[in-house]
Length: 137
Image (cartoon, rainbow, N blue to C red; front, top):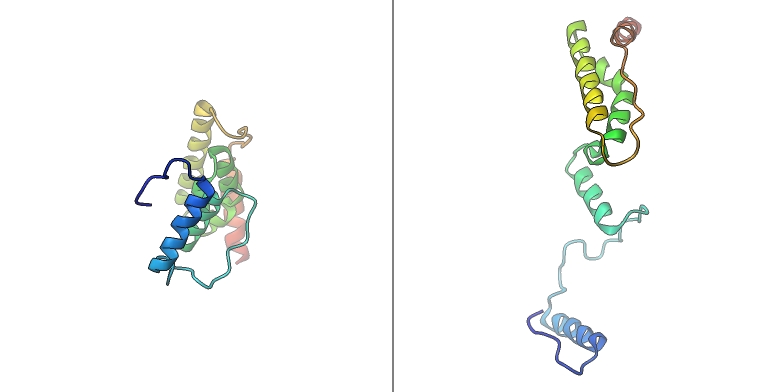
């Protein structure tokens, strides 16, 4: 919009006039996404929906958008799959130790978001599960 709303003119009329002028200039021609259906609403606000779509479109993990309490919970849930990709027991222990360090740090620094309810991961139990999964495959 290049100009201010004139005094004594209704806001609605002025906006409609701006849209009409833009349409006449062809400003709405060949816009990206033209002719495509709108994405389904997720119940989030429009900004959140847009961010989620862009992150997923870029092939990135949306876990980074979660509050720390939920991100750590998700990471603990995904731990067996994460450890399955590791080749050595030493590396499995490192991954679990790193996760436990971040859980401890979150308990020390947790100020906002949902309550932190994640327990530390038992390193020996994780290693045993890793050995069992490797033997089964």
